[in-house]
Image (cartoon, rainbow, N blue to C red; front, side, top):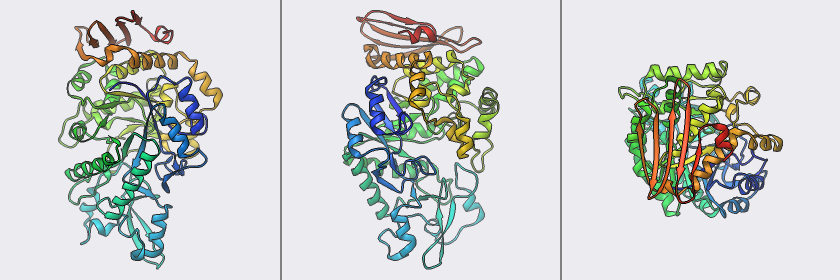
Length: 490
């Protein structure tokens, strides 16, 4: 998989889709693809677009489907298929509340009695995993006065679909067709791990979930779309789902790099390099924060790192952010730790540019398709003011850049160095060859690609003073850099 992708909101790099296209065609032209986070109606709802009232329409404040197609004319476009839920303000849900069994959308939404037709005990209800505090239901009042308990896995305004229902399936097929017509080439299955509720289990990434993934992948491929699955889970579940889809996220990489940078060791990261899926989208940070649960234990299954090592990562992030990451991060129901750090990756490293570029270089050197989040690319620090204004912890990592802020960031060494890595990964022939890695006697990690006489090598040392050096040779000459300033100057 060649090329590098950008992950960005349509409105946060200039205000709308036409401006996003200008940035992609200009200073970010080396990106081969872009994942545009939800641009549907409304793009600025309670969950920053992940609660669409109309999943098939581009929010007119951002542009039109023609603007999406214009972006897609020059690069691959990924968009979200929100499979778990719709907005409580969607036309379908509003119609169901008004007309009940007479609604053409009756059965589309998951109610308590759909899952528990014979009722449920306390243990039945509390068995379900939820990535938020509290229970997974919200009481809604029908027009005739009845109250119905509707599943709302994430927020009361995000109403879960009954994905086993034909009407919900027809809805998902309609959205897939709309995305393909809009120029989208890859769909990300958002929150698919929660989509199937199976009594007697925690209903997260169960065999029933994998069956549904197979079905929705088949529907997407009928439309000519590739599929990226988004699952924050034990690493064995990522390995299980990877063969079923085109792409799976490597969410374990970020916590393992934070562990290595915090401890000066590379053994846990090297073990992951041995077993990680090759069809991975590699990430450090995303709009959802920095996943930590992906490298940790789950039940009786050991993790790539243990519970104490997870806690140490959170503690180091809290120290680096003056305690702010602890305030912004949410502890899910029935858990003792958050499942992610709500902070920018740069902030979690105390704005240490060498450590940050070391981590980014490792990401860009691994097999798979690298994806850079716009805040991370621009060296963003926590937007505390936005978090305080909205009360949403993930907003610390969702800054809205003004044109002046964007220009300033593009001129910084941190961003220029990352753009140099993007260019090298995109154009150097070695990255189309064979990958290998090794751990040196001093504990440093060496990553290398070889294609004939073309070679790209990266050596990183995690401690006590983090350092990195890259060296590329071949028919185009030799390129070397051993620090942030040298890399930014390439």
